[in-house]
Image 1 (cartoon, helix red, strand yellow):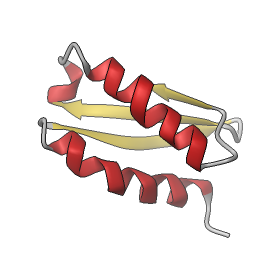
Image 2 (cartoon, rainbow, N blue to C red):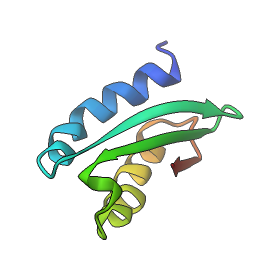
Image 3 (tube, rainbow, N blue to C red):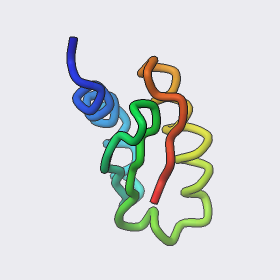
Image 4 (cartoon, rainbow, N blue to C red):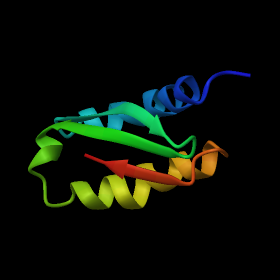
Length: 76
């Protein structure tokens, strides 16, 4: 079985083109306590008023749904 980090990064590669179309990017920084993914947003996303919707309502829930070990996603 692949490591959690590898599986999350593989999932992020699928959504990254959509985020990059708007001048942003997202990166997995670390896994905490075995069940929380901590990610960082870059580029235009850091100042976008809709970024929290994109990350907290779309990417975060997708990671939780697809990666069974992850129960929480936090964005820095």
